Length: 377
Image 1 (tube, rainbow, N blue to C red):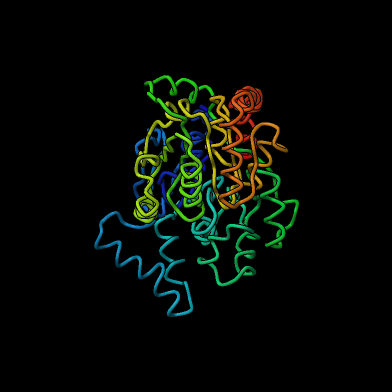
Image 2 (image 1 turned 90 degrees about the horizontal axis):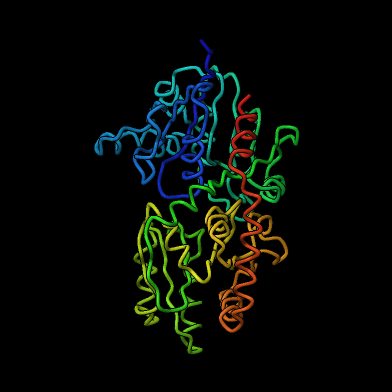
């Protein structure tokens, strides 16, 4: 009988974000004859929860009961700040996650990275970084300072970055030995994307712009609304389909209503299978402030869609110097100008579609899974 390697993976939640989806894709493909996987969740639930393979054992840090959750929120978040000491948090983490594993992985920045470092008796630890923390330092709220956060990363044996540029940006912010750092691009399940895109047909009768993501600050979807307004003002006939949910949904809908874009800007909500909508797109737009390795851009490329994307470490790595898609500045007019040029020049639109398909050849899921499993040694 093969002695399986025990692995504990901690992630904040399984909401509809890119890192969460990447983790599920990995868990669906990992070799369970070699590994015994336990998944730790700081917060229960999320749209990806039902997709966790049955082979995976699940353990929660915070209780699912609403009333108990309020109490433990005080222990985990409020009291440490008031007391200036997190000994209760450390005790609780070690009580909930008391088992010892061969390998422990913090699969996201912030809480996962912090809490996993609290665990005692760890054999080996890996931290995964999915974003450009220099330009999207959302994790700063969980640490006292940059120096404090840097110390937590130094407790890990290895830090995995999803792109070269995200690693370089990380090193401008934190002081962590370079010999601990490795680059591993995200798993992109190309075959599954192509197959699921055929699940149903999405009808369209206009020029279609699609974007997918959590409706949160980092995705900067307000720019997409402004692009729609500029296109309407210059007389173009089109629709924008926004797929996703999040805390900024009401704000974005209010912006759409204020700009009188109700007919042009369509909120489609969360879709467990967004690929038929991506397949129907003439242009896929990513408006993010920054991205470590934009998953939805990769998915659009797999489907041969023309991509317009704001400049970020991940977008530059995937699209090159406007070779496989158009990279723009972060102002709405630059994004609008790129879309306008594609509408005005159908041959350019088709050319980028062909280039996208060529670029999608870099997504080899079997090779990527082998690389990921090599990190687990």
